[in-house]
Length: 467
Image (cartoon, rainbow, N blue to C red):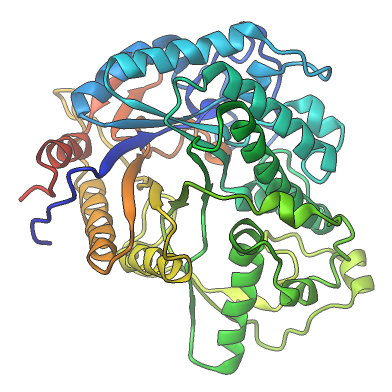
């Protein structure tokens, strides 16, 4: 790649999530989340671990902020643990939980780092799951109450409010595939969860602006699927279009256009009658956004499954297909090719350019940010305690160049957040996968510089990709 300059006001950041880094799951009034319970399920987590200690950032946040300052990031995207704020079914506010995040934000601001808060990065209070979880409409209403509480307390500190992180994962991996908490395999429930997540977003935006006024910066982060057809056959093109509706338009339509695509209802008619959508819901969901966050890691190649025909409603109920795509039984994903990351994901920087430009062309006035991008590789600690990770450096460089190409073509991309600041609990993979710019020695909680962190430091300092 060639050296590339970025706009002076472009925001460089790094990101984490509460359950992945905080630990302290029983401290200061916090009660269990769905991930605490899911981690206790035998076989649910690859290494049998949990977020009980994680990176201990709950206690070490000042040390991590010092690292961020040395790294040079201008913004830190973190998430707030709902079970710390409303730890009981009665919704009573836990002051100790709010005080923790106030101290975190104050320390960030003192270091000149803008706080970007995600209200929901998957750690639903377990008491709400016991009441039905995201398939239950009441969870969306409870989320709006929680959002208002946090906005009232931290509104003078937060730069941007992100309501939800990757609702695709919440609904489909949590309620359809059973691979994430709460570990359910119920496609009708997954579609209900998707709608109620959309509703939760809209209600939360209204709650935030109700507390802070219409100028409050609000956002949502989506992991939109970049899908490529195996061939140009009509069947494979139709497979891509179907997955796009189920994986992407199910969020984009209500959030940004105020409607669902009628073809989505047809695709999933054998799964659900969508009776959970009530009059007025779409108006509640369709709220003005300040910025749309996009997370990108890899792309997928798909085709029509040879010989497959859609099941009838009764067949689907008798033998539910438990993959993460409700209504997509006729579609097949092909194995990824090329150099893969440790997650088994392909490396396709061009997919990021395409995603940013496609989104910009459809909503030309909408500000965009890349809120997660990064890679896991098999890191080895050198004798001097550093980590040489040329594969991660190459991945970051290629994807930041791809972002730059989208900028060149006119996409209003205002920032980039590397995933992640530090190695952490990688959900169902436990501690077996490492995404961090900084390594973590989990035995001592020491943070270790990686070459990728030094590379990113140089990029930020110069406002340009290093030579």
